[in-house]
Amino acid sequence: MPELIEIAKAIAARAGEGEQIEAYLAAGRETEVRSFEQSVENLSQAESSGVGVRVVRDSRQGFAWVGSLDAEAAGEALAEARDNATYATEDEHAGLPVSDGWPAADLDLWSDELAGYGTSDKVALAIELERELRADRRIRQVVRAGYTDASLEWAVANSLGLSAASRRSSCHLFAYAIAGEGDDTATGFGYSVGRSPSELDLSSCAGDTIERATRMVGAEKPKSAQLTVVLDRRVTATLLSIVAGILSGEEVSKGRSLFANRVGEAVAAPSLTLLENPTDPEAMGASPFDSEGLATRRVELIEGGKLMGYLYDSRAARVAGSVSTGSAIRDGYRSTPGVGARAVSLLPGELGQQEILSAVGEGLFVQSIAGVHSGVNAVSGDFSVGAEGLMIRGGELAEPVREMTIASTIQRMLQHVVHIGSDLEWLPGRAAGLTLAIEDVSLGGG
Image (cartoon, rainbow, N blue to C red; front, side):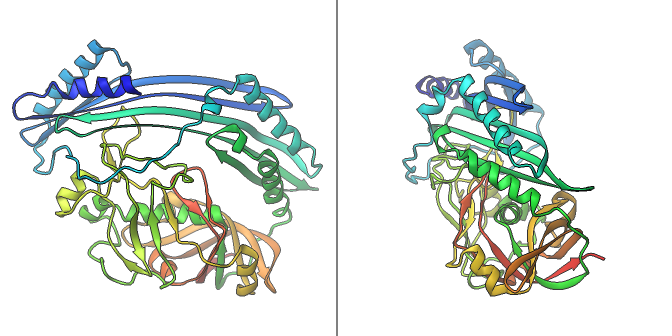
C-alpha cells in the first residue's frame, strides 16, 4: 500500500498550470472454487492491477486507464487522459474534491488469515459444502457449491492535496440446490460471508440452502389478495438497495428519483430510519474512504420517517449546491467515480422474525423475488416483481406458494411498514437485511 499511494501522488504532482489530476490505483486478487460430485469442477485465480487517471482542465474532464502500475504506462494513461479532456463536453461542475476535514474511521478490513489460506484449504471447503448438501436425501441435485474470496488494496491522490489508501478482504461460501418429491421440485440458495475463512459457517450455509429448497416443494399458485407481506432478510436488502439508489443526489439532479424535492417530508412510517454507514466494520462494503479520497461517514437518509437528504459525491454535491457525503464509488481503476451506497441498513426494531409472524397473523412470507430491474420504476415508484414464499396462517409459516407477483409502490411500501425486525444481518453486497412487515400489498396469483 505505501507503494500505491506514492505512485498516485507522483502522478497527481504532474499537474500543470490550470490543471487538476487524480490518480486511482488498485491491486487485487480473487479466487473461486466450485465443487461437483465431490471434486473440483472449476478453480480460478486472478490478479489484476492498474491505474485510472482523471484530468480536469477548462471545465472539461478526460479519463484513461491502464492495466499496469509501471511508471511509463501510467505516464501514457496521463497523456491520454489529457488528450481526452480536450475533446470532452464542457461541464461547469467538473472538478476534483479537496479535503473537508472529516476524520476517517479507523477500520481493520483486512485478514492476514485469508492472505495465508492455501488453495487446498479453499478446495476442501467447497467439497465439504457439497458433501453436506448431498447428505440430505431430499436434495436431488447440487447445482452450485463453492467458495470465493477477494483481496484489494487501493490508493487515490489528486493535485489539490487529497490522498487516501485502504485495503480490504472478504470471502464467502455459496450454494444452490434442487429439492424434490415425485415430479415436484424447488430450488434454494444459501451463503456465509466473512473477512476471513474462520468466520465462515459451512453448516449454516448448507442448512439454509436445504431449508429454503425443501420448504418450497409442493408450492402452488395462490389466490390474488390484498394482504400484509413479511419480507425475508435477503428481500429486504434488495429493497433497501433500490431505495438507496433512488436517494442518489445524481439521480435527483437528473429528475430520475421519486424523492426529488422532498427533503423534510414524511416519506416512510415513523418507525423507519434508513442509514448509510460505511464506517460500520460489520458491513461488507465498509471503507474508511470513498473512491475520491474523502472520509466516509454515517448518513441519515430517512430518520423517523422523514427524508433527511441524499447521497453525494463531489460533482453531484456541486450540482446541488451541497457538500459531498463521502459517497463516491467506482468499479475499479477502469472507471470514473459516481454516487452510490456502500452499507445501507434500517435501524433494527425489537421483534425477531417469529414474533413478527405471530403479530401479523395472516399474510405472505416472501422468501425471494425476481424481475427487480424490469419491475421497479425509480421515477414513478411502481413496484411489481415475481415472488415465491409461504403463506402465513395463525402466525406460522404454512403452505408454499409461487408463480405470483407482489405489487405496490415504493412510496406506499415505506409508508405501510408495520414491523421492523431485530435480526439485522450484513449480506454480500451493499445492504443489510432484516425481517420487514409491510401491510396493504397486492398479491397477484390465480
